[in-house]
Amino acid sequence: MSSKQHPFYRSRAFTLLDLIIAVVIVAVLTVIAIPAFSRDITNSRIAVARETAYAVARDAQSMADSSLSGDGSIPDPNGFVIAAASEAGVKVTGASSGWTVTGISGGQVCLVIPGSVDAQSTVTDGPCAVVATGLKSPSYVPSILANVSVGAMPVSISSDGTHVWVANNLDGTVTEISASTASVVNTIPVGLSPAGISSDGTHVWVANGGANSITEIDASTGAVVKTIPVGTMPTSIVSDGTHVWVANLNSNSVTEIDASTGAVVNTIPVGTAPYNVASDGTHVWVSNAISNSVTEIDAATGAVVNTIPVGAEPFGISSDGTHVWVADMSSNSVTEISASTGAIVNTIPLGTTPYDIVSDGTHVWVTSSSAPVLLEMAASTGATVATITISNGPGTVTFDALHIWTANANKTVTELG
Image 1 (tube, rainbow, N blue to C red):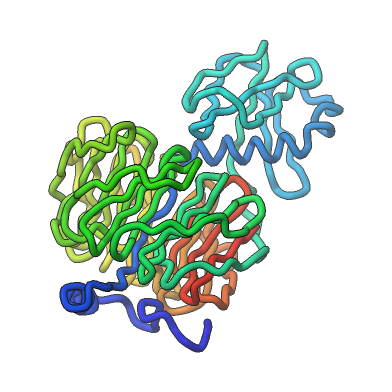
Image 2 (tube, rainbow, N blue to C red):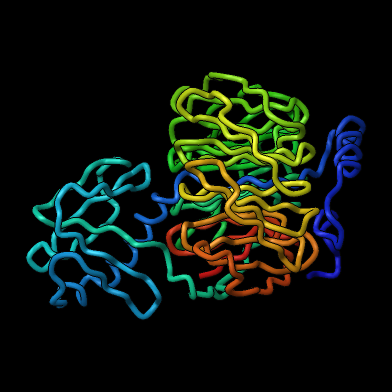
């Protein structure tokens, strides 16, 4: 870690007293430093389609020459696994811009590329469709590719596959990075102390912790569209493309916003100090840092379905559609919850204090508040696969089709792949 240590990435867990002190600083100086745990968790199936797009496009020629027919799979040297399904009507999930399916080699293997098919469309092309059995193989370990300079105290990060968006808490800005070149494209002023950020590919949503508001940004132009009042001290935000969900730390509530209009739809009471929010499109999951619990919300109705006790000080939370992963900071553990039943599947002890967490369905990526590392866990077993040192001090983490991105203590973003 850098010699000047980020105040929230220290050797002990972030405590409630720290939070109270931060609130006082807001009142006096109107500048706060809120660690946020927002990430791009629109739906893991979106990432699966993106990963498929990359892997199939890259290996299209070798696949075209393959003798694969019917159901089967083709692993490639980089650990991707592509499956060819012989049945038509397989559902292929893409980003908001969609995906196109084109037959190769007699229609037995398909190429998935950015195109015009809407997300959640049923795609058919004769007898052929492509699905991915997962993102990169469980044994895949990424390497650091680049470090990008951003604003002061980048506390939240989100990638939509085209751009990476970073909330700079002390600057009151958002940094836009090209995902393909890892270069800064734009710096956008937003509200006071942006603490959480999420992109659904069409809009970027920013939770302004010091302004009690949300800034909506056009993802294609970087222009600010509107500012939306919400609860007190919004620290985390996620968009599933239909609704935007905001965790209001001091209001003990979640605000639901219509993603198409920006109108507030609902305000939902949850546990004490909701610090982070995640959505898998079916349910919304909220980590309540003081209640030591997770609130499960029905995304279709906004009704609270369940309250699940977890470890001490749950901060980071992520759902891959199958499991929900919770970083229990003061318990030095990760809680794994079944997304379908809400039952606790596993409590996984870690040798470091977990801070932020995100799952792509195959891997679970965890940052630490006490060490400059990114932990890689296998989603199928919960076992730690690798510990990757990132000397810049990773705080929050996100992923897209090709890369993992961390927002770091020393005003940088690290790209891994």
